Amino acid sequence: MATFRLTLPLFAVLAVAAPAAAQDAKTPQKAKYQVTGLFRPDRVADFREAMKDVPDVKLVSIDYKNAEATFEFVPAKAFPGASKPEQILQQLDNKVRQATHHTFGIMAPRAVPREKLKLEEIRVAGCRCKACDLAAYEAVSRLPGVEQATASFDEGRVTALIDPEKIDRARLIQALKQRQVDVKDR
Image 1: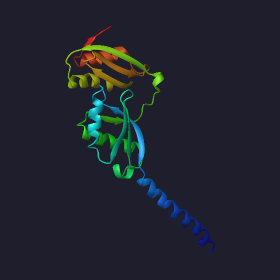
Image 2: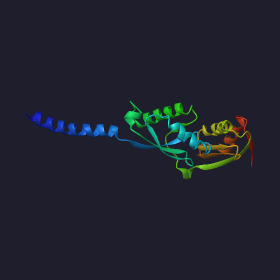
Image 3: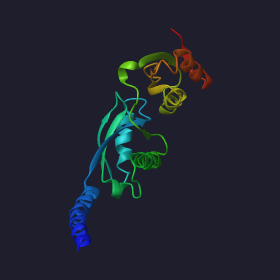
Image 4: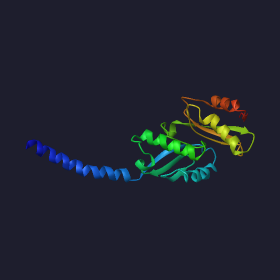
């Protein structure tokens, strides 16, 4: 009889908790992530358009200046089998990459506070097409220590928000020159 008394309260707790857990599985969540591929302002429209092809994920807002976007989704529906935040991030990145032919990606939010980062601007010249901008962007954005980058030959510049403890201006210039970007040193 004592076992029954202990089990009954436990059963009551589980009966109440189960619907709550089921409700959480259906509740939309918002999450903010960094977006790679936002190398010039018109790419915001490209990203918005591409997100229409990502099922079960709504783009709530996009912040070009910080290369961040806020998304809304029901995790169980949008990312079946993903139970951890890093699994959700990976599945969202895969969906975005597929929808954008690998021109955009999703990363975890910036770990280094913005006030500890340094903005480097490098003057460049060359072709004025989106593909050339993308090549210059990729040359610097993938380097360790680069938290965010932009590239626009129309504006004649590449910018990189860097962690100065991990990378410097000279390494950025070297990476651009390796991609045959015409760098106009100061």
